[in-house]
Image (tube, rainbow, N blue to C red; front, side, top):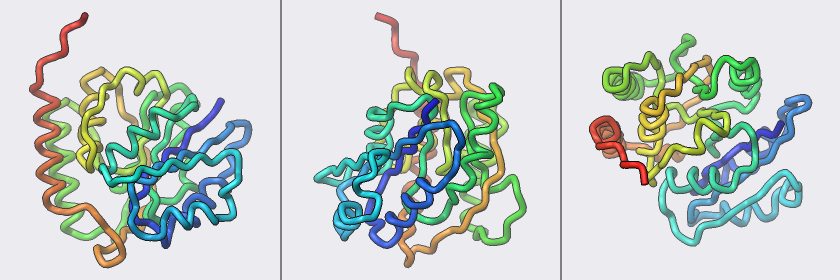
Length: 236
């Protein structure tokens, strides 16, 4: 069995080397691992850092560099397209989420209890998440649950894990941060049950490189409504 770790990257010069090092250091026993770095047109020194890193020639690591910035959704979709694993996991390139959580994220899939697992930042007790972030995530997650009959606590989490068959027939269109609600909505519409496990979270501030903002919240609402009320594509 193989795990594909997809790492979308945009201007993460200061963290990308450590993040990939942490991913490679995770011991998954008999599970093989590949890391797909999808560099989404970074304009800082991210590409140079990747090229000269200690793991640059590690055969488990594959780096792809887009000449322009398209958005997180586009970067993740590129990684999904090139992934060869039986299980696919999305890992952000910052240090907000810890790869040492992989064991608990993979456990429900390996037990056969789920095809899709999300790492929830809100299942455990944490005082490091700002009130604004909590309120925004609570509203978007509530809307997701209302529209699709789910019982999620953290729709916007970056830690999303899929068994390959669950994601292969999901048609994704979003290219920005609206990828998060879109993939959740389409999985739920396809009948997939999403299992959540608690994960630790160390949030960044805007001045530290946090990129998501108010506009992304409106884009998320639009994506959820569009996925809920669009007409099914007729079979050929």
